Amino acid sequence: MVSFESDYICGAHPAVLKRLAETNYDNQHGYGTDVYCERAKEKIRKAIRESGGDGIDPEKLQVEFLVGGTQTNATVISSMLTDYEGVVAADTGHINSHESGAVEFTGHKILALPGENGKLRGDDLEALMEEFYGDENREHMVFPGMVYISHPTEYGTLYTLDELTQISGICRRYGMRLFVDGARLGYGLMSYNTDVTLEDIARLADVFYIGGTKVGAMFGEAVVFTKGNRPAHFMTSVKKRGALLAKGWLLGVQFDALFTDGLYFKLGRHAIDMAERLKKIFAQRGFRFWIDSDTNQQFVILENGFMKKLGEKIVSGFWSKYDEDYTVVRFVTGWSTTEADLDALEAALDDCLG
Picture: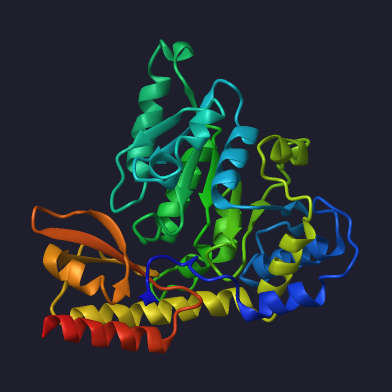
C-alpha cells in the first residue's frame, strides 16, 4: 500500500546510498574523526554562510554528528545544563510529549508552557522568567537554563523570524541557551511560507541540529554549536549517553552527500511540493483540516468510518480524537513521496467517497 505515515518510511536517497557504496571499503578512523565527517562539516558551514551568514563567524560553527533525534535532544540538553537547571518547552514539544521521558531520565526537568499551534509564545516565556526571578524562593526551584523549540513544530507549523528573534532576545536577557530541534529542518526551510533562513537559525540559536533521518539520510543528525560553545569533552558526553557511532564515517558520508549540490534543500522543497498537492486533493473534496500547516505534515479531520475504509488502501497516522465521530489523521510527505503516491491517494479518496 501507499504510505503517508511518516517521513522516515524509506531507507535513504539514492545519492546517499551511492556514496555509502562507493566508500564501503575505505579504511577510516572511528568515532567521527574521519575525512568524510570533516568534509561534511565544512559543507554545512558553507551552506550556513551562503544562506546569508554575514553575521556569522564561521570559525565558531562547531558541527558534530549523532545517530538520532531523541539521543541528540537528550545529549545536547543534558550536556549544556548544570545540575540545577531545566529546559523550557511548549507542552506539545517533542521532548515533552513523544520522547518517553528521555530528557528527564538525564536528571533535568522539562518546564512546560502551553503552546499555540505547537509553538512556544515569546510573551509566555517572558512571563515565566519574570515570575521566576520575582520569586524569593527560587533557590528551591528548578532554574530555567535553556529554551527548546522545534522548527517545524510537532504540528508542522513554523516560527516567523520575528518570533524567533523575540525568543532569542529573552534567552539573552536571562542567560539561557536557545536550542532548536531541526529534525525536519529541511522541510521548514523550504516551505513556501517562511521568512526564516539557515543563517537566521545559526545567528539566533546557541545550538541547533540539521535532521538527516527524516530528510534523505539512512540515519543521523548534524548538531551545530553556533558560538564556539560546544561543551567540553562533548564526545565523552555523547558516548556516555549511547549516541556515539563507532563507524562515525557513515554519518559523515551521508551528510557529505546531502550537502553536495544543494541536495538537502532540493529534497526539502520536493516534500513541500508534494504536501501542497496533497492539501489540494483533500480541500477539493471538501475535507477539513485540523490546523493550517505550511510544511510536510498535514492534519485532516476524517469521519471514523471513512478513516477505516481509506485505511484499507492508504497508510496514514492517527493523531488524536476530534470528537466521538471524527479523528484527526496525519498525512506526511517526504523526500521519497512521488506523484504516483498522490495519484493513488486521489483515486482511493474518490473510490471511498463513491
